[in-house]
Length: 447
Image 1 (tube, rainbow, N blue to C red):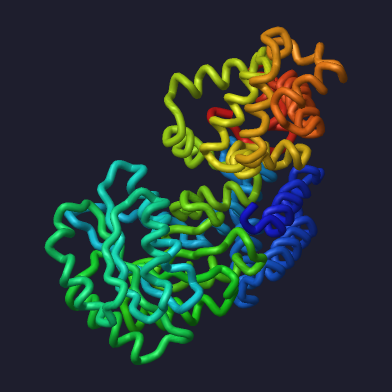
Image 2 (image 1 turned 60 degrees about the vertical axis):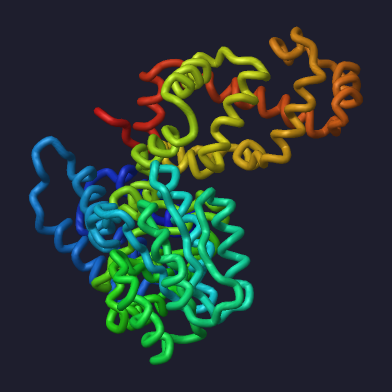
């Protein structure tokens, strides 16, 4: 998970509230120390941490508990609200109001601009927009080829000129074709540090392009140093927003998120993985909800709509909840879920589910493994597919020989099936799910 250590620490803090007999100043002081420790370990600026903890403590000690809430619930809500405010409070949405809407990406070398250009292109293409990306980075020798490749992966059009050393000439060459697109994403050059040369180049390019959005791409592993970089780019280039890349692979992400959030340029997207579709709009309320284990049903539903039809989703959920499915059903369900991303990330979005400790092999089904399982399934009889419990050692050897799949992988498939059946027995009806959510401190709509 993104910021997994911070998430675990915050969940444990909230569990402490749930397990306490009553809310008093001693409990509040303990919670404040836990929150401070968790944020400092995630590389958040110490002054920001103390400001946040002061606000939480003041509200917890002075505010009257609203009607309909217990003191515990109110305290949890205060923590949630202040963390949300801490990260920017409201989400900034990129609005496509004209054709073409031009988005210019800026940033230093190594920030992930080119990869982000492809991810952004894929994000908007999946939402029905006609998108093009343009190479204006004439500094890096591989810039042209890299952007061309990510454009192909994203399924968007590409414009660039490999040998040209003048960024403005590249733009002007293709300017006439851009009116056919809803969105044009411009990938600009970077430097090792923000210099007058880079500022002049970006401002000169933007004077001609007149970009509707100027987004700074910044790497999460910068931690607290992200604030100075965001402020410097904002002062010199008047950026309209920030994209934090590579947040999934660093413990410093808390520093980058909060540092950017306190500048005048809000975070608009975060890169949550290496794949071309692993870019998410940054919504402080949803993000904090996932951190503390409340889930993010809105993002989950958006991913589901992108991956399969409502009818498919309905059929899949009904069969899963009944626990009445065979090996083929399991394979189809896992293949469909894989379109939405890793199972571990999906679990984070379901209220309370992030606290269920599923076996690692159940959370990490790779595309290659699914393909091999498909071969194994094709070598099974109808009887074996419908009732896998009959598969003996002799049958396993026959299936392995017929499919060319190692016996250990087939055993893993059968183990996955049994684990899924066992888990689904706990979810036979909505009441059982609600009980589990309450027990784990999660929430469901309408609860």
